[in-house]
Amino acid sequence: MTATMLPPHARSAGQNPLQVKSQRIKLRRGLTFLFMTLVLPGSAQMAAGNKRIGRFALRSWAVLIGAIVAVGVMALVWRGGFITLMSSQVPLRILQGVLMLAGICWALLMIDAWRISRPPELARRHRLGFATLSGALVFVVTGAMFASASIVSDQRDFMGAVFSGGGDKVAKAGRINILLLGGDAGKDRVGLRPDSITVASVDVDSGRTVLFSLPRNLEDAPFPDSSPLHKVFPRGYGCADHSCMLNAVYSYAEAHRALYPGVRNPGAQATKEAVEGATGLKINYYALIDLKGFQKLIDAVGGITIKVNKRLPIGGQVPGQQVKNYIEPGTQHMDGYHALWYARSRHADSDYARMARQKCVMDAMLNQLDPVTVLTKFNRIAAAGKQIVQTDVPPSEINRLINLAEKAKRRPIASVAFVPPLIYPGSADFQLIHQTVQASVTKATDAGAKRAKAEKKAKEQTPTSGGAAKSPAPKKGTGGAADLNQVCTAGSA
Figure 1 (cartoon, rainbow, N blue to C red):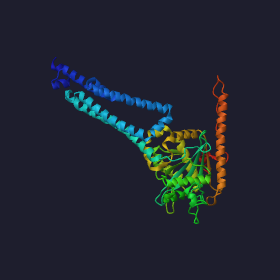
Figure 2: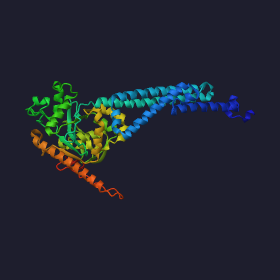
Figure 3: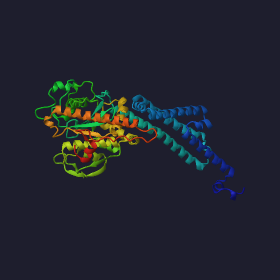
């Protein structure tokens, strides 16, 4: 073959077609080894390297893939077991270590695949690109495995920091009662004081939920006989200067921790007891959200959508503070900053109207926080949660509460606010509060039972050859309690 018949790059390098073909084959061989290692770690070693290493890598990879498939099947068919596994410290720590080790070994196999490709034998023009590609793949596989380990680490830290356990797992009269506290530890306050106090009472069978809001300035809240504070305040939490309000119980207990030996959060425990005395409900768990970090949590989930019924000022909370802006009426998708101001604004409104808005925020988060959002933004949610969320729910009860939340989404949420003219915080009729709570819970339970009975009857009457009978739509409201959707639409408690 003459020089004029050679390709330009071959003529310039003085190569013949056989050399060019050989170089291409070597390049393809090297790329194949890299691809094999990327898809099936150890396969390149089985083909051209140390078969013992390749065999061990393939078996290890098969075990890892099998474990992932098994966990995936568990998530589909036994969600309770999956959640328990993913919320336990030891399995998560083991998984984190396995992912990190797998990332390192995978990277070493990728480097070995580059080695057995014999890069010195590649054409000079191919060596740099091949080395760059090999390094990029090492970075990708290591980064992917370490990123997965980081997610697992966040999950483990989140579970350890937030779900401390200590609550009461036993349902009370067929209901789980959860105290929701919005904490406010601002610069102008001594210690943390709950800014919002709400009890969510959920029927374990139907999911029917009633939210009971208590004003933070409620005085003389009685403590149960079993409470350490009952001996200190036998007539309820009150004092002559009217500074002993419900939201101050938390800081009092924190300042007198000796009354609660061995209790992780005496303030929350004491508040639970005060709320039990005020409402007559036995509280199973508490969940405390520090409002300082509330906006981080809302931002982490991508915001929430709320219907705003009146113009609300941003700022002007304390004397001398100017109003900076306004939240305008209408349906608004709010970031954390605006959602926090929607929940807390009181410059041109009352504490009682603010209580209603806070329940609207809870309702929006319950209905808009879907599993896909949680999974895709878990790192951000966990980072925010570790800073602002505290609860005595144990990890073993997470699946149960998730099931309750799913049931609650399918039912109207009733709302009761203990505000004037129903009660007056400075001289509350606690017997009336107990009666109202019991009546609201009974009606919510009865409504759930009636609906379940109607659904069962409709199912039994469904023709075998025809279409399914439609279940009756749930009735809104629960007697004296207002439906929360109506509350949020009307903008009144």
